[in-house]
Image (cartoon, rainbow, N blue to C red; front, side, top):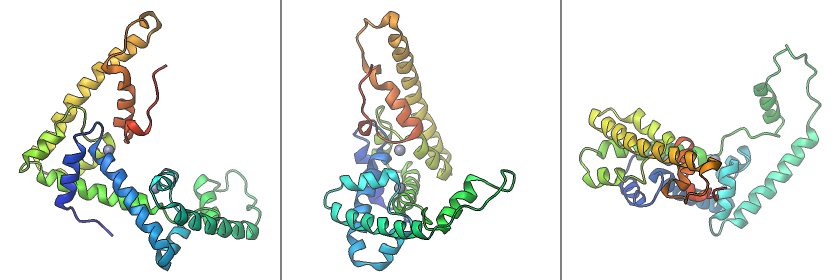
Length: 244
Ligand SMILES: [Zn+2]
Ligand SMILES: [Zn+2]
């Protein structure tokens, strides 16, 4: 079900902009954790929820591991995955050898994964947390672009140099920004950040060269992580790795 844009989404984004990285990635992590905790709680009591998780084989890789980090979810996760093991084991027992085909007879990854889904060995539905968050993130970005011109706190928050939307979230924001002023704001704030980051990466690449390795690292030290986080989405603090 599509999520409606709400003022609290804008508030959450303003608050998250005080921390480094994409504020929506940060808020979305929290929404995902809450969603999974509630679905895991319901799993015990609600047959619809249970069937939904059977069809999707629980959560995708990213969300399944994230669910284990939310407090109080391990019993629910164990019940779901215990059930999935039995379900997949039965499907595996009933599975038949693959149809004999020549390579030109329509063999493709798609038909193979459809055949596995039909046999009950691959999920038939996408991860419920991915679907939920896609809707929530879109609603939040609609709320943001609708409020940009009238909400100075929001504009200030989104102008913070160390914050700002990652590219996947910026794309959605641009796709829903019909107001030229909102579009220009996103364009200009992003451009300023990108110029800064490009300069830092040039510095990182220059110093990383062995001829210059005696120099101390400065603010450019984690610029490569911020570049990856910007293009691919996500937060650097989830993937912190030392230089070298
Ligand atoms: Zn993001
Ligand atoms: Zn997912």
